[in-house]
Amino acid sequence: MKYIGIDIGGMSAKAGLVNELGEIVAKRTVETDKGTDTVEFIANMVHLTVDLLTDCSLTLDDIGGIGLGFPGSIADEAGVVRYCCNLNLKNVEFVKLFRSGLDFQKTIKISNDANCAVLAEAKYGGAKGAKDVLMFTIGTGIGTGIISGGHLITGNISAGSEGGHTTLYVGGEPCGCGRKGCFEAYASATALINQTKAAVLKNPTSLLAEAVEKGGLNGKVAFDCAEKGDRAAMEVVDRYIKYLGEGIVNFCNIFYPEIVLIGGGVSNQGDSLIKPLQSFVDTNVYGKEYNPKIKVTKAVLGNDAGIIGASLLCTL
Ligand SMILES: [Zn+2]
Image (tube, rainbow, N blue to C red):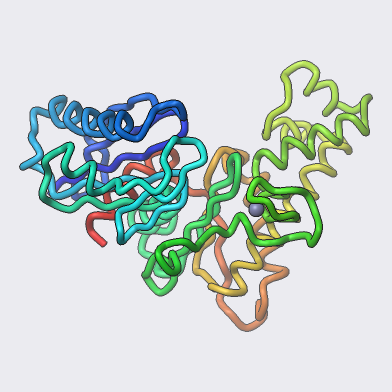
C-alpha cells in the first residue's frame, strides 16, 4: 500500500507518494507563507494532495493514508496544530478540516517534523533497524527526535521532545522560547553563525575574517577555515563541537541510544563534525567503561526524511 507524506515548512510544503519500500515515487511542492490564513492553507494542502495523485494517475482510493509533518507544536492524537511560529496556524483542528476538504475517510495523521525525521531514519535511513535512536536536526534551531525501546517519545499530548530548549548554560544567551542558555542558543546553525561573527570581530586579520568578507557569514565558513589551520576558526569549531557534544551527552545519559543521528545543514560538514562529536560522546557519556559504544553518525535521508517519516505516521 502506498501512502502520502507531506513535509510542511515555513517556505514550502513538499508532498510525496511513498511506496512499501519507503521510496518516494512522485513528488510535488507548493509554496507556504506566514500571511496565508487557515482556510486558504488547508485548501492549498487539499490541492497539493489531489494534484500529486493526478500526476500519478491515481485517486484517493489508491492510497492507505496521509501523514503530515509540521514545524511546530502538534497534538498528534487530537489532530490539532497548536502552534507553528512560521505559519499562521494556531489551535487549528487540522485533521478534521483537511479530512472534510478532501472528503477522505482513511487514516490522516499529523506530528512534529523532527518526529517524522527520526521515524524515517530509524526505518529506512542512518539508524535502520535500531530501537533506541536520538536524532538532532540542526538548523535555525535544534529539533530532537527520540525513539526509545522502539517507541516514538512525545510526552503528554505530544507536547514534549523539545530538546533544543533544555538549558546548557544557566543565565546564558537568550533563546527564542523566552528562556536563557538553551541548547539551541549555543549549538544551532544560527548560534554557530553568531559565534563565527563574534570571532571575525575579535580577529579582523584572520583567514576567517577574510573568508567572511568575501563569501559572507554562514554555518560552513568556520569549518572551511579551520581545515586550513586558521586559529580563530579552529577556536570557533572546537567550542561549537563542545556545545553540541555537551547537549548530546545530556540526552545520551537519559536515553542511552544505540545511535545518535545528526541532521540539518550543519551535518553536511561530514567527518570534520562527526568524528570529534563521536570522540566527545565516547569520552563523556556516563558509564562509558561498561556500556556499549554509542555510534554518532550523519542522517542519510536528507530532505526526504520529512516526507517519508510523515507517511510512516499512518503505519504507527
Ligand atoms: Zn529555548
